[in-house]
Amino acid sequence: MNPLKYFFSSNKKIIENSFFGQVTIQKLKHGSFSYSCIRHFMPVKYKISIFLEGKNNDNFSFANSFFRKIESSYPEVITAITPLLEDTLQNWKENFKIKDFKQEFQIVSLSIPIQKEDSIIWEITFETIHDPNHQFTVGMSDMEAKWLNIDG
Image (cartoon, rainbow, N blue to C red; front, side):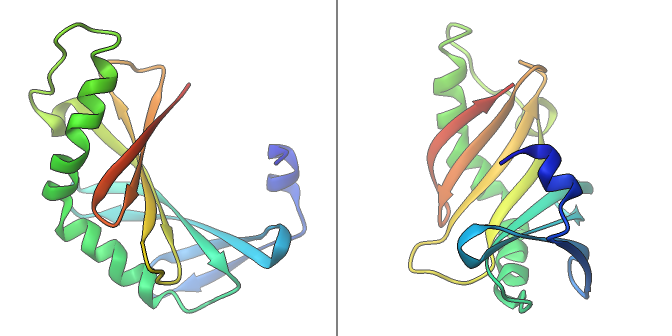
């Protein structure tokens, strides 16, 4: 998608949601929608970007509950993604080990579905002190780390 078209598109509108606050809605092709907002993430005590995807559905109840589940399960999420991050970073730094995740990695965003599906596919993105020029996005299936993408 052309980034300029996204930001200047007339297919965007803003709604107020009681849980997520001000949410920007972008209509995509094939009848699906992308929702974005910024919200406080309790485990790290700062705001992060939230991206929600799904069909035109102003009912965010599943996304609300799944977001809360991620917040309450954050230590388990870190445990699940640590081996994937370490394996990848060992390609650049021999014998790399994460010593203090909260000091070394800062969450930037979450991408979560609006509707519940059989397998909940979502993403969590981090920046790290070990490579400030890249972001690390971990693809999750439910609470299991499946893949890693590096952007930058």
